[in-house]
Length: 197
Image (cartoon, rainbow, N blue to C red; front, side):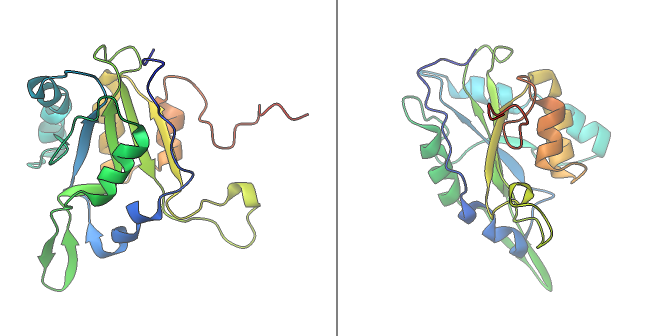
């Protein structure tokens, strides 16, 4: 299990993570990789970032780096997950304007991965995401998604490629991916077993 002393609390929503999405193309973006593990060498972070790359290149013939250590600082040991969210809001998105179209983003603005344990199999990989606003007037309040509503879940390293390619290629939404790959079972949002009878 991830170390109990890690503060993995998230704000309910962080709209700044999603506002840029309407102005950029993220299909060629990289997903930022951060760590909360003390003394994790840069080489270990590079090794983790490389886990899905071969499949990304061969299965989808992609030339971009699917996962990269975050810039300028990927190591947040001793800090809170909220600090990583703030850093990710401020990350240079490496926007490249394209004539007549949306800018290409070098970093996916609304999702990132955090290493929480050097033993990746033991709650070591956490994906954090912010969703676009969703829902219409007819939806129940609990079914609506606020702008930038945040979520997170732990996943296994052997699922990294499937999870991230599904995310990058738009095959699945965040809640679908969470339901499929969350190693702790049902996702928190919309859980039926909330203790109220």
